[in-house]
Length: 137
Image 1: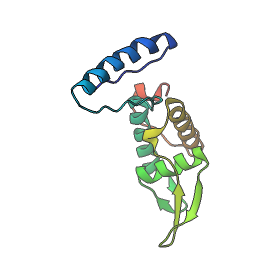
Image 2 (image 1 turned 135 degrees about the vertical axis):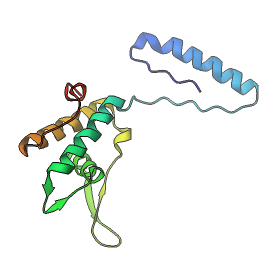
Image 3 (image 1 turned 60 degrees about the vertical axis):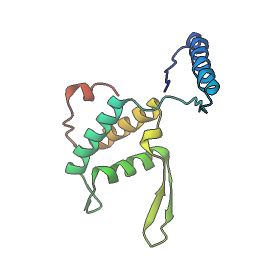
Image 4 (image 1 turned 180 degrees about the horizontal axis):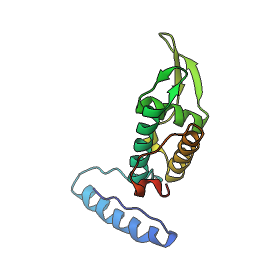
């Protein structure tokens, strides 16, 4: 598999040429290829920071009389960030129509972490993540 992150316009042509050579070789052998171009999603460090923060919030904040899991808090925060729709569920209750954090861009993840930090500050959440996670997003 060939995968390359391009950050500058002058890097595009050499990467495409390399991808073309690999794809051409595979096709000549009779093997089909898939070529995908996508925006870069969240950083692994952002993901680790988000889950550490979610754990802290889940242990320290009661939400309308309930204790929520880290996964449930993730749904609350991502819905708030994306201003998602809520619809009635088939079997009762409600469903938030949202998007997975795995598909978020680096910028969106930074915004989500900022939202979580602001929420935590309002509720005196003590974030316990390692120092490297607390510095920047």
